[in-house]
Amino acid sequence: MNVRTRFAPSPTGLLHVGGARTALFCWLFARRHGGTFVLRIEDTDRERSTQVSIDAILDGLRWLGLDADEGPWFQSDRLAIYQEHVERLLRQGRAYRCYCSKDELDAMRDAQRARGEKPRYDGRCRHRTGPPPAGIDPVVRFRNPDEGTVVFDDLVRGTVAFDNRELDDLVIARGSGMPTYNFGVVVDDLDMDITHVIRGDDHVMNTPRQLNIMAALDATPPRFAHVPMILGADGQRLSKRHGAVGVMQFRDDGYLPEALLNQLVRLGWSHGDQEIFSREEMVALFDIADVHRAPAAFDYDKLGWLNQHYIRQSDSERLGALIVEQLERMDLDARGGAAPSLLADVQRDRGRTIAEMAEKSRFAFEEYDEFDERAAKKHLRPVALEPLEAVREKLRAMATWEPELLHAAVVECAETLSLNLGKVAQPLRVALTGTAASPAIELTLQMVGRDATLSRIDRAIAYVRERIQQFPLAGG
Image (cartoon, rainbow, N blue to C red; front, side, top):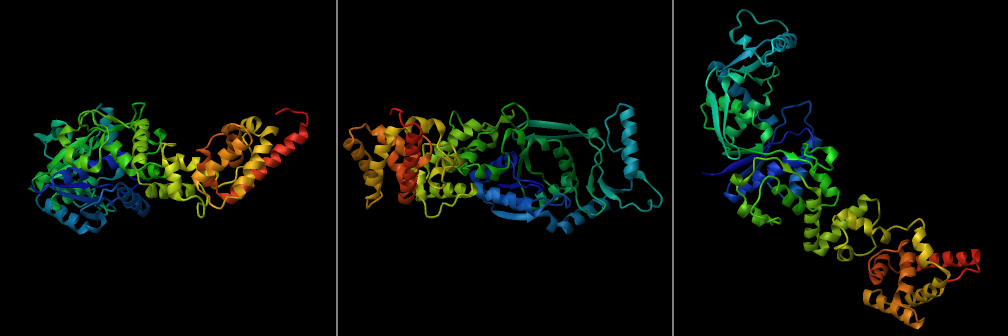
């Protein structure tokens, strides 16, 4: 069998975590079996479908590296195909036109609720005779079987059965002629030779309806696999209140695509106790039969841990370029500043996301407003004046601005003044960053650069002198 899977999002919003997990499972299943991964955009809901959403979906898949072998196909380009199948079912008596108005349908459902019944279409237009009512564009309904059971073997959930008496005659084409979801997806899956439909378990109730339509079209259905829903840490369905759920927001928040993929693949699937999977390992090990039925919880702490792992594994050039992108999102100009690869090497172990690494590099690209009060009180005391002036002269005279030479210069100043290194390095650090915490002093100097270093030391010296004038009798 030539395995063919598909990811078929509706472009009515962002590519969310649930959709991305479904796309990943479809992609992995196709890759594992040497098959074909098809991308289909289900854009027949003209009122809600937008180009912005289409772009967001395509951008998200591209960022995750889930490349399609076919597509994207757009349902809006296939309307004639759907109409052809609607006409076929009408000719065969497997579908009929329904002229019920909205008021008539509302009254029918109200009466059913009053009788304690489940609201559902009662099939009244199956046998409607006489001329059609004026002013109504009829929908087309599928004539669902009245008896029997729809049974299918779900690759995740096992055997699933539905009584046909629980299924009413669903609309397959709107008054405008536009196909509904349950009809369009059937025609597309059959026309595109999809062999395996992998999707969220919120679609389980659609499957018996779709199987009945496939049977009416004399078609062999694909195999179905309904994967569990994704929950937040509180056990509720994942939503915006839990944090970022749009895939590209994770990128903007500083996560690497391989970290998010690794988190997604573990939402409902496992391979022993293994937590970290390369893309190649995912393809080699993924089996839809190993997907659990229970809901899966999205763990932001685990994602942060995975992201830190992949940050440490990343090439410095790539990581540096991503830090620069984050700095630009922070409205900082990174051009002409510290080399991106330097930023990566300095901050690699200092943040769980690229955004954190960029924030920790902010001091190299932005002048601070004022000294941290506690840091200045402790380290910019009168006794710091001499070391600051000495290290400034030493640094001003340096011909080469390299970490080893910068470290040696600070050490030499300390030795010349008979001070331990901290008595020079800490006032210098506060001068450079406004705070008492930063990378190693030679790396901090390299990140800030010569001109900004000298200017900031001058600022600190002026601060200390002003403090001496205000408190002339203060001790060291």
